[in-house]
Amino acid sequence: MMKIEFKNNTIEFNVQYGIRKRISIHIDSTGLITVKAPNGTSNEMVISAVKHHGERILDKLHTITEAREIPKTREYQDKGKFLHLGRYYFLHELIETKELNEEELKNSLKKFYFSSCKKIVGERIKIYQTELKVKPKTIEVVESKTKWGSCSSDKRVTFNYRLAMAPVEVIDYVIIHELCHLTHMNHDRSFWRRVGSIMPDYKEKEEYLARHGHAMTL
Image (cartoon, rainbow, N blue to C red; front, side, top):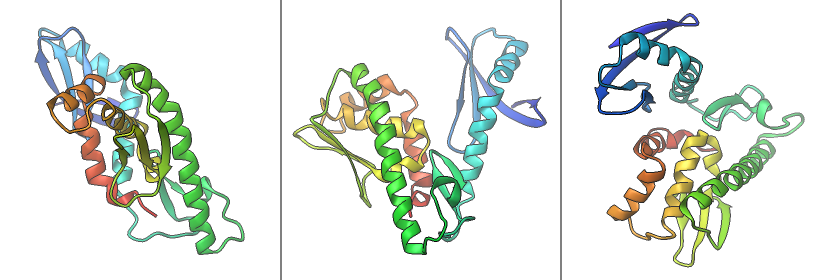
Protein backbone atom coordinates (compact mmCIF):
# COMPACT_ATOMS: atom_id res chain seq x y z
CA MET A 1 0.00 0.00 0.00
CA MET A 2 1.34 3.43 -0.98
CA LYS A 3 0.01 6.82 0.03
CA ILE A 4 0.36 10.45 -0.97
CA GLU A 5 -0.89 13.78 0.32
CA PHE A 6 -3.00 15.72 -2.16
CA LYS A 7 -4.79 18.98 -1.32
CA ASN A 8 -4.91 18.21 2.41
CA ASN A 9 -6.19 14.68 1.74
CA THR A 10 -4.41 11.34 2.06
CA ILE A 11 -4.84 9.07 -0.96
CA GLU A 12 -3.95 5.43 -0.31
CA PHE A 13 -3.59 2.95 -3.17
CA ASN A 14 -2.30 -0.46 -4.18
CA VAL A 15 0.00 -0.89 -7.17
CA GLN A 16 -0.18 -3.88 -9.52
CA TYR A 17 2.63 -4.34 -12.05
CA GLY A 18 2.20 -6.35 -15.23
CA ILE A 19 2.57 -6.50 -18.99
CA ARG A 20 0.78 -3.34 -20.10
CA LYS A 21 1.53 -0.20 -22.08
CA ARG A 22 0.35 2.51 -19.74
CA ILE A 23 -0.66 3.33 -16.18
CA SER A 24 -4.36 3.09 -15.32
CA ILE A 25 -6.20 3.88 -12.09
CA HIS A 26 -9.22 1.89 -10.88
CA ILE A 27 -11.51 2.72 -7.94
CA ASP A 28 -14.01 0.07 -6.84
CA SER A 29 -17.38 0.70 -5.20
CA THR A 30 -15.84 0.48 -1.70
CA GLY A 31 -13.23 3.17 -2.42
CA LEU A 32 -10.28 0.80 -2.90
CA ILE A 33 -7.82 2.37 -5.34
CA THR A 34 -5.65 0.17 -7.55
CA VAL A 35 -2.97 1.56 -9.85
CA LYS A 36 -2.06 -0.83 -12.67
CA ALA A 37 1.36 -0.06 -14.10
CA PRO A 38 3.79 -1.57 -16.65
CA ASN A 39 6.60 -3.71 -15.24
CA GLY A 40 9.56 -1.55 -14.26
CA THR A 41 7.55 1.63 -13.66
CA SER A 42 9.23 3.74 -10.97
CA ASN A 43 7.46 4.85 -7.78
CA GLU A 44 7.93 8.44 -8.94
CA MET A 45 5.97 7.78 -12.15
CA VAL A 46 3.19 6.02 -10.23
CA ILE A 47 2.91 8.88 -7.74
CA SER A 48 2.95 11.43 -10.56
CA ALA A 49 0.06 9.62 -12.27
CA VAL A 50 -1.98 9.54 -9.06
CA LYS A 51 -1.38 13.25 -8.48
CA HIS A 52 -2.31 14.03 -12.08
CA HIS A 53 -5.70 12.38 -11.50
CA GLY A 54 -5.97 13.56 -7.89
CA GLU A 55 -9.06 15.73 -8.42
CA ARG A 56 -10.98 12.91 -10.10
CA ILE A 57 -9.92 10.42 -7.41
CA LEU A 58 -11.05 12.68 -4.55
CA ASP A 59 -14.33 13.40 -6.34
CA LYS A 60 -15.02 9.67 -6.76
CA LEU A 61 -14.12 8.93 -3.11
CA HIS A 62 -16.41 11.77 -2.00
CA THR A 63 -19.26 10.28 -4.05
CA ILE A 64 -18.72 6.84 -2.50
CA THR A 65 -18.67 8.30 1.02
CA GLU A 66 -21.88 10.25 0.42
CA ALA A 67 -23.60 7.16 -0.97
CA ARG A 68 -22.91 5.35 2.29
CA GLU A 69 -24.59 8.11 4.30
CA ILE A 70 -28.09 7.09 3.33
CA PRO A 71 -30.85 9.08 5.04
CA LYS A 72 -32.95 6.85 7.30
CA THR A 73 -36.21 8.45 6.19
CA ARG A 74 -37.27 10.54 3.24
CA GLU A 75 -37.75 14.13 4.32
CA TYR A 76 -39.84 16.03 1.82
CA GLN A 77 -38.69 19.45 2.91
CA ASP A 78 -35.94 21.90 1.94
CA LYS A 79 -33.26 20.09 3.95
CA GLY A 80 -34.27 16.58 2.88
CA LYS A 81 -31.48 14.83 0.93
CA PHE A 82 -31.95 13.01 -2.35
CA LEU A 83 -29.60 11.36 -4.83
CA HIS A 84 -29.03 12.76 -8.29
CA LEU A 85 -26.32 11.39 -10.60
CA GLY A 86 -24.55 9.73 -7.68
CA ARG A 87 -24.51 12.68 -5.26
CA TYR A 88 -26.82 13.77 -2.48
CA TYR A 89 -28.55 17.14 -2.84
CA PHE A 90 -30.94 19.07 -0.65
CA LEU A 91 -34.46 18.88 -2.05
CA HIS A 92 -34.57 22.61 -2.79
CA GLU A 93 -31.45 22.21 -4.97
CA LEU A 94 -33.34 19.84 -7.27
CA ILE A 95 -36.86 21.26 -7.43
CA GLU A 96 -38.92 24.27 -6.39
CA THR A 97 -40.21 23.61 -2.87
CA LYS A 98 -42.05 26.79 -1.84
CA GLU A 99 -45.68 26.39 -0.78
CA LEU A 100 -45.85 22.71 -1.75
CA ASN A 101 -47.09 20.00 0.59
CA GLU A 102 -45.40 16.58 0.95
CA GLU A 103 -47.46 14.87 -1.76
CA GLU A 104 -46.86 17.74 -4.20
CA LEU A 105 -43.15 17.69 -3.44
CA LYS A 106 -42.98 13.94 -4.04
CA ASN A 107 -44.81 14.24 -7.37
CA SER A 108 -42.62 17.15 -8.44
CA LEU A 109 -39.47 15.24 -7.54
CA LYS A 110 -40.60 12.18 -9.51
CA LYS A 111 -41.23 14.39 -12.55
CA PHE A 112 -37.74 15.83 -12.11
CA TYR A 113 -36.18 12.34 -12.11
CA PHE A 114 -38.20 11.25 -15.15
CA SER A 115 -37.11 14.36 -17.04
CA SER A 116 -33.48 13.98 -15.96
CA CYS A 117 -33.38 10.30 -16.87
CA LYS A 118 -34.91 10.93 -20.32
CA LYS A 119 -32.34 13.66 -20.98
CA ILE A 120 -29.24 11.73 -19.95
CA VAL A 121 -30.34 8.42 -21.48
CA GLY A 122 -31.18 10.26 -24.70
CA GLU A 123 -27.70 11.79 -24.77
CA ARG A 124 -25.69 8.74 -23.70
CA ILE A 125 -27.50 6.08 -25.73
CA LYS A 126 -26.48 7.79 -29.00
CA ILE A 127 -22.83 7.18 -28.14
CA TYR A 128 -23.27 3.46 -27.52
CA GLN A 129 -25.69 2.87 -30.40
CA THR A 130 -22.91 4.04 -32.70
CA GLU A 131 -20.26 2.01 -30.90
CA LEU A 132 -22.34 -1.19 -30.85
CA LYS A 133 -23.85 -0.57 -34.30
CA VAL A 134 -27.39 -1.22 -33.07
CA LYS A 135 -30.59 0.80 -32.91
CA PRO A 136 -33.61 0.01 -30.71
CA LYS A 137 -37.10 0.35 -32.13
CA THR A 138 -38.21 2.53 -29.21
CA ILE A 139 -36.60 4.00 -26.09
CA GLU A 140 -38.77 4.69 -23.06
CA VAL A 141 -38.28 5.76 -19.43
CA VAL A 142 -40.67 3.95 -17.09
CA GLU A 143 -41.37 3.28 -13.43
CA SER A 144 -40.28 -0.17 -12.23
CA LYS A 145 -39.69 -1.70 -8.81
CA THR A 146 -37.67 -4.67 -10.07
CA LYS A 147 -35.64 -3.74 -13.17
CA TRP A 148 -33.16 -1.00 -14.03
CA GLY A 149 -33.71 -1.64 -17.71
CA SER A 150 -35.22 -4.11 -20.15
CA CYS A 151 -35.08 -5.10 -23.80
CA SER A 152 -37.94 -6.91 -25.52
CA SER A 153 -37.67 -9.33 -28.42
CA ASP A 154 -39.10 -6.67 -30.72
CA LYS A 155 -36.19 -4.33 -29.87
CA ARG A 156 -38.01 -2.00 -27.48
CA VAL A 157 -35.78 -0.85 -24.62
CA THR A 158 -36.88 0.74 -21.35
CA PHE A 159 -35.01 2.38 -18.50
CA ASN A 160 -36.10 2.90 -14.90
CA TYR A 161 -36.50 6.60 -14.08
CA ARG A 162 -34.65 5.99 -10.80
CA LEU A 163 -31.43 5.59 -12.80
CA ALA A 164 -31.25 9.40 -12.67
CA MET A 165 -30.08 8.90 -9.08
CA ALA A 166 -27.02 6.86 -10.18
CA PRO A 167 -23.63 8.13 -11.38
CA VAL A 168 -23.39 8.65 -15.14
CA GLU A 169 -21.00 5.70 -15.58
CA VAL A 170 -23.57 3.40 -13.92
CA ILE A 171 -26.29 4.72 -16.23
CA ASP A 172 -23.91 4.02 -19.11
CA TYR A 173 -23.59 0.41 -17.94
CA VAL A 174 -27.37 -0.14 -17.95
CA ILE A 175 -27.59 1.44 -21.41
CA ILE A 176 -24.80 -0.81 -22.74
CA HIS A 177 -26.38 -3.85 -21.08
CA GLU A 178 -29.75 -3.30 -22.74
CA LEU A 179 -28.28 -2.40 -26.13
CA CYS A 180 -26.22 -5.60 -26.11
CA HIS A 181 -29.48 -7.51 -25.68
CA LEU A 182 -30.49 -6.30 -29.14
CA THR A 183 -28.02 -8.84 -30.56
CA HIS A 184 -27.74 -11.27 -27.62
CA MET A 185 -31.09 -11.80 -25.87
CA ASN A 186 -29.67 -14.23 -23.31
CA HIS A 187 -27.01 -13.63 -20.66
CA ASP A 188 -24.61 -16.06 -22.30
CA ARG A 189 -20.84 -15.75 -22.69
CA SER A 190 -21.10 -13.88 -25.97
CA PHE A 191 -23.39 -11.32 -24.31
CA TRP A 192 -21.00 -10.63 -21.45
CA ARG A 193 -18.02 -10.52 -23.81
CA ARG A 194 -19.84 -7.84 -25.81
CA VAL A 195 -20.64 -5.83 -22.68
CA GLY A 196 -17.03 -6.18 -21.49
CA SER A 197 -15.66 -5.05 -24.85
CA ILE A 198 -17.34 -1.68 -24.34
CA MET A 199 -17.08 -1.45 -20.54
CA PRO A 200 -14.36 -3.73 -19.11
CA ASP A 201 -15.18 -2.77 -15.49
CA TYR A 202 -18.92 -3.43 -15.82
CA LYS A 203 -18.89 -5.63 -12.70
CA GLU A 204 -18.07 -2.55 -10.59
CA LYS A 205 -21.20 -0.89 -11.96
CA GLU A 206 -23.30 -3.97 -11.17
CA GLU A 207 -21.89 -3.91 -7.66
CA TYR A 208 -22.82 -0.25 -7.27
CA LEU A 209 -26.45 -1.02 -8.12
CA ALA A 210 -26.43 -3.99 -5.77
CA ARG A 211 -25.01 -1.94 -2.89
CA HIS A 212 -26.85 1.35 -3.39
CA GLY A 213 -30.02 0.40 -5.24
CA HIS A 214 -32.08 0.44 -2.03
CA ALA A 215 -31.15 4.12 -1.55
CA MET A 216 -32.21 5.03 -5.08
CA THR A 217 -35.88 5.40 -4.29
CA LEU A 218 -38.53 7.98 -3.32
